Image (cartoon, rainbow over all chains, first blue to last red; front, side, top):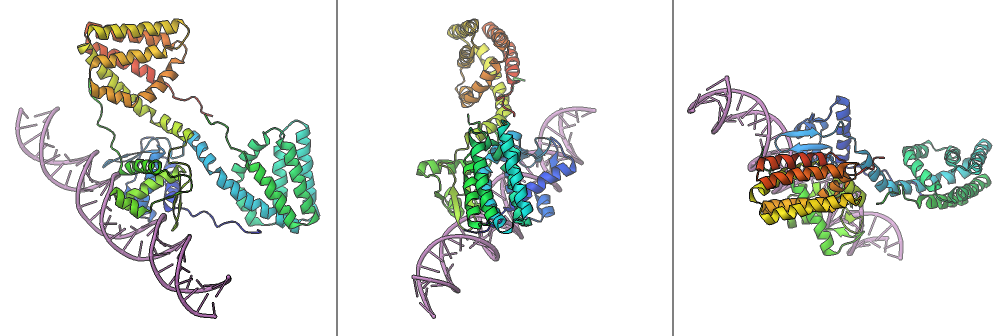
Length: 231
Length: 231
DNA sequence: ATTGGATTATTGGCTAGGCCACTGTGCCGC
DNA sequence: GCGGCACAGTGGCCTAGCCAATAATCCAAT
């Protein structure tokens, strides 16, 4: 299962339009109550059909960001088109599973490559990360920094700028799940143990073992809900 | 300004379609992973254009309720199409201003009508509600029940089954804002005072005074945020 | 001068119909 | 069997157009 990642999730046209509209609003310095260009003009300027523009407008409408008046135009409800903070959290939470799947695919492959390509310097950095994490835990902390440093070291050892970039693009959400995961009692120590197994496989130059260990690690870390506030 | 409410908010076709789809799913007993009928079939059975169906689908997609695969069909992500609880709260909060506007219009008119049509029995019930609320407050409670009973009594005295039904349709959200409002320090007592003024105007048979007093009351109650959890 | 009513352009709501792209399935030849 | 291929089903997107609500303007009547 040394498989690559799936191609990027197909992006709907209306999603791109939504994004363009957000940018347009901030770029033009529009604020609450300001009017958006007519559908027809948007369609023309973005070179898409009115139907696609309409789908984007529907999105903004259900998110409560714009106010659409039949025959009267479309108006901003807030200062911009950014999704409301609380709603954004809900949204992120909803997308978490997808992110974690991607992370599993990426990190597993990274571990495999790291086992093949690691240099002595890489191994030193990995060891340093392990020490960091242990020190943090012994100091009563969660070991967040050591955790991050470890995964960064493995990524560096894999020497795939492409995979590294993919990981970077979801780094923020990974950081959140890491934080949440390490907060669970006993998790920091067990995480450290899993890191050690991964490091051993990489040091031994055993790609399959490294991949397997990493997969197991990521999966256990993934078994966590991002936010705890379910009323 | 004894004016009635604005005509109902114009409902978009896609909103109706979303509603129909929700009902369809529960009615057919569909669950997670089940497939929805094709767009074309939905359009035909609901007698709307495919574009409108698509807009509804976009809504469900944005809310993370369905999974749409190009060329492969549409699949339920959850057990039903009900919006996620947390997201529902966000949504309700977003719509609160609208609800409170409606409440102001309705209750103001109800107070006016009550001042014209109240019977001795109505006045007795209103007085009973006031006593209830005072007793609750003296017992260290918020007076939620007395509050509700008071507004119910005024509504009954107005003898407009139509307005009463409108109020009922937003009763749940009014209850939330009431709860939240009365939690503020000093609010229960001041609310009771406002209730007394409204009751006096109704007893005196002064529609304009009753309407004004009710409007002021509802407006102060409205100045409250539904939920406090802004992280 | 102001109000009230038509007129017209603008703009969103919705439909019809069509082409293309992706997916899955089953058939056919090897 | 097994691999490739054709085909039907389905979503993605477009073009073109009509209808309905709004808003701006102008004119007439008070």
